[in-house]
Image (cartoon, rainbow, N blue to C red; front, top):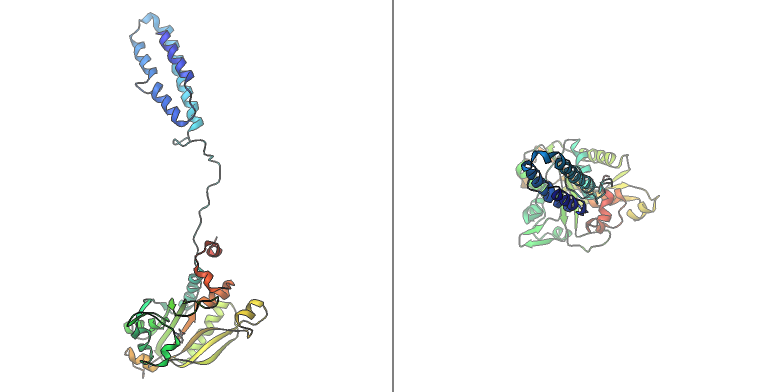
Length: 337
Ligand code: DAH
């Protein structure tokens, strides 16, 4: 029996443990219930009592040695609560988690929506694919009227196009809701234009619409002054230039004065100091009639803001196309962390 114990002890000593895996092999060979050590413990029960003292001592040494060897290796190769390999350095800092951020266009849209929501405008959206009626006819673009040429349209099918402006959402909202209506409609619009640093075949607009009793051009101006003050953080000089849109009468375009002090402002304003940011006007009576609104009682104003140019201005982006390459080196500049 002693010989047998010594032989197992020898095997214990010679067993090479160099990984968590081999330590497990060691345990399976020696320490489990049916392992070599317990086999000897079973044998021990059957031997003569006179031998038990001497053999017991040897057996205890073996048991102790095997358990210790296994525990030491476990400490060395295994993580305390699992069986991870200690060759991984647990003190290393974790890989930083990268957070997504808002695209500059989304950030500006959200900021503008928030400003208007503070004066009672809710947000509505409309479809990107529009029918001719909502994109043109209902907005007072006469059939075959040259005004339709103002915008180079991407047609999808005969009567459908991808919208050329968010003004189409004005019609969708007015078909659904009765005045008073006070909404802004952010969205993407598409035009068949040459792509360059300054213009793209798709861009973003925020449409504004207010229809109620006694709405005047003065209300429109005050609303837009409020927007400029809130968005640019100061009372930038603003000017209105008379313009033409089929769906508003009178119509205007609004410029803000950035000045020409910095090279950037000079470039953006083509040396004039003025930057055009939106078109606006009083909603044409024909538009209101098209959606069944009593024009004796109600009037309204509308405006359409170009988001991309404002985002470029805000973040100093020089080429509109860079916003849509999805290059993370560009996009990660706008992450909040
Ligand atoms: N839809 C016009 C465009 O795409 C912008 C616009 C002008 C919108 C005047 C309006 C408005 O609501 O009143 O250029």
